[in-house]
Image (cartoon, rainbow, N blue to C red):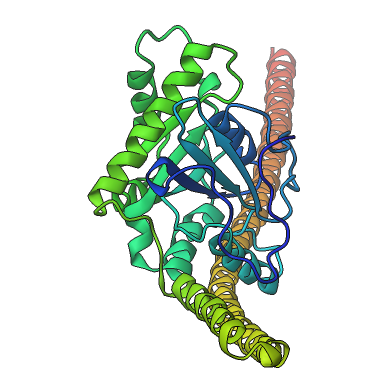
Length: 364
């Protein structure tokens, strides 16, 4: 697919660059599986560097890097991640992928692009993602966070001002939790249409994103993002290389033994860092799982109460029908009884009248 892909991370950290650091920008894309991270990465790079198609299980299985150099000399590096905040992923894998992202960007990350889709409902999983980012990378990560909404092609194409259309969508559909995420990142957001063939539109949406990245960088003193985890990984590696150079000059015969010792020390430190990450991920996932279980229990309780009420209503309705039938039968019975009594009285009156008539004839 072209570009630079670095799959060997055993010992090297400084990835090759074709330009000066001032001309190099590195983005890390994070978000839920299916939100369009890979498609967005391709739009940024201007080519199909990553595999992208609709899939509930995700295409990107591990962090992957692609790089493009534009005609003006600027180098854009994009790191596409798997769905790091999906509860189904193994904790050890998540920790190693987070460390891997920093090892793939030794000069730092200029922007974290958190990808959401306007086609899908904002989920609890995505709400926890921002909390996970803070836990993984520290509070400072929010100063580098930009929210990217994909699915721009779904908005009304007849709307003359697409920005107004986007703002209207957020006003109608944006839940409070997503509003909070936008507030935390100072309302930095962009809309991407990854399906458009319009080159002017492609250029404009990339221009808007790059301008926002420069604003982020300027507001942070021109420094890309690094945190304690990255520094902890990078420092031993630098010390390791410096030590190897010194040993080459002074103790060439001892190079192999010292190399093995330093490598073991570094591997041990990396293992401990990964273990700490796994503990953080485990704790957050347990909290999220417990919250979901409580919500499920509450929902089941409501459904059970509704079922009991429905049964009681059916019983009451049945009892009412039985009472109405009984009253109807009693009314019919009373009506028949009154009818018979009236007929009996009428017959009696006829007989009495007949008897009196016969008695009068006899007297005459």
